[in-house]
Length: 189
Ligand code: S3P
Image (cartoon, rainbow, N blue to C red; front, side, top):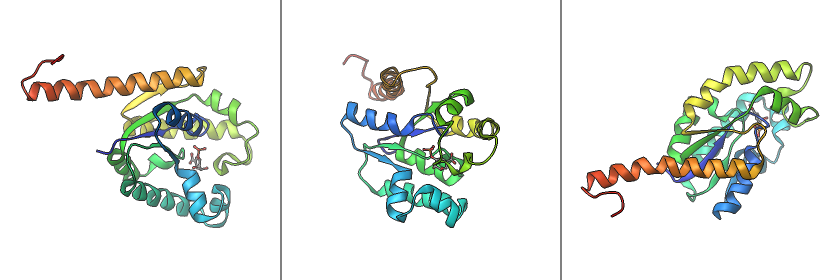
């Protein structure tokens, strides 16, 4: 398994902002899949949806993950909210490293994205209804793709970062214990 830290979760949960802050804390580089796709396609996500369709965008997400497999590891990777929906992408995420799900409620998403125009899936009438429906459809997928879950509602960035790092440490500990047992060593050696 790769040694990247990958952030997944619904639109507006803070993946990109938290990714940047985590990269400062850990002194690692950060890659945002939406930004990488936009740079390579020379189009915004909205333009890709409008001119090429959602399926083409989803294909670009898969290609983006495939490229990341071949790139330098130890990165922080923030992803688009729909990226884990494809089974192939979930496989690639597992290969890439530890997957952290930033869990958010519909109420927070609606408050944060009330006047957003950059998310094609939330444009048009009744954004609250769309957020509620999509979040319900997707929560199980996010949970199944995740190694760790961090609830982000009503928390500041620092608190969220601390929690991510704590849980990442906790996730490593069982590996270490298992390795020590296999080598007939004891914790503390
Ligand atoms: C999408 C989320 C967006 C972007 C695209 C589709 C989704 O990214 O990839 O608009 O399907 O949830 P953010 O989660 O960064 O908003």
